[in-house]
Image (cartoon, rainbow, N blue to C red; front, side, top):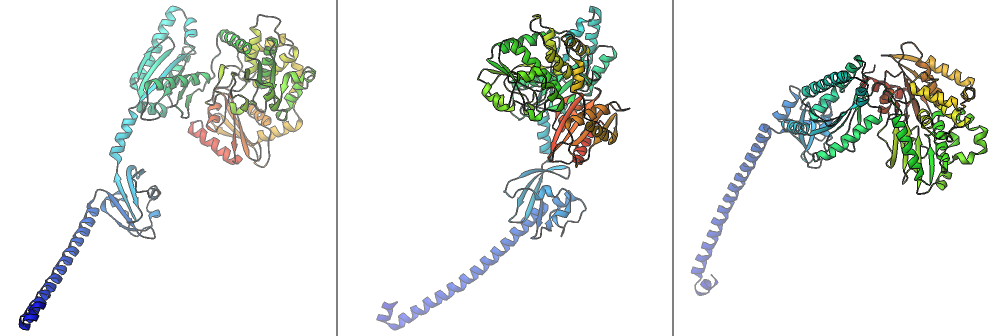
Length: 634
């Protein structure tokens, strides 16, 4: 164009006009295009928003939008359907429904979470940026998952307690008839519950079923097992049934693992006296059913003789023996410990009983005040620190009158040592890991009775008890049986007779067990606090501002059993500034052990207790009432 101007200005001017016209036309067209494009984009945005709103409105996904004050701003029909006719707009989320917190508590981690809400399962996503909740009904899928879970295999062992001994006591015709009737009852029960049953020896059966059936059995508390026992009792045949049942703890499991766990569960049931069911998955807490009757005495002393021989073998292999009773020892614990001490020393092995003198009650203080002990104290007892110096790598530890490490005077001395247990309390889940011999007989009145039988079975007349040791063992039996009124059998009297023949001094025992007048007054005060709970149960609740001796509480519970219409008694009292105790007793028709286990304690079917930390006496009372109601005992 410059060249055109240079040659002829008219041509240059014309070209300039054309360029200006072209630019003007281009600018006009571009502006129109941009206006049309913006209009199209705006319409498209409106269409997308409308489609989005329509999709949210019609979506099967329930949607809830809220404002800054957590009030409902908008809901779609799917969410409104969850709440029915309830008006939601403008309502505070927290006021919508008592279960709304199940939704509000969903983490803001941009992940779907499963909750149970309004009787259905939902997957929920919380988007705080958009102030929105999204809910998808997942009930059908979750039900399918639950159904698949309920189809998982459950493995059980069923054991007929004392079956062989009972059959041997019958003639052939009676035995055949009884066995036929018993197997028929078992088959009818398993068939009705769709349980596979297979007999693997005279006393033992395998059971296979699923989790759904297990839930049904637990809901009815395995009542049919009790019915079979009651049917046998009506025929004067004292048979009972024990079951060990295992179920998977995860989706991945093996039948071999289930079988091993079921066997362990059966061992636990038998260790607690039989006539009960133990249900437990690996590494889970056990659930107990039954066990409401006193286990029957064994018909012979064969087991006692076998255990005694095994005990002698274990002692022979050790360098020395440490004997431990439970913390705050009672007469049974101390008597049994002194009896075992005699057995060990007669084998020319060093033996000591680990004690904490600060925990001695008056009766124990009177016992160890004997000249026999005082002259040879260092040969009988060691403190906790002295026990550490006494022990070597080949020390055998014998626990008497307990088996839970947490209750043991030697609690932190067990690690790395072989352990022998001699006890009459029902076995709990807590158990030492390195046991080489376990002798738990819940049918026995006391551990002192079990230890006395070792001596009565001894053929070597040189290994006999002296007067002091016999007196200590008899005192243990007397205390645990409340003067032969509770938990006694024929073998209890046999043991007492043997001890008396060895010089046991009942007059000395009476002196040791004498009570201070103040104890009697306190016990009478507690008796006055007694209230009846119904179904043969009574409870005494002590004032919360006073601290009571555990012996007084236990004696009060024993005394309450003499009251009319009382089959089980409970005494609730403050043990210290930080703990409350419950002492429980029964005449044997009610299992107080399972009640105390629910509250963190344990013991024996008719003699149990627990301690509760950081609670008031009233709170402990309410906890006891709740457990009894759960067990349908009141």
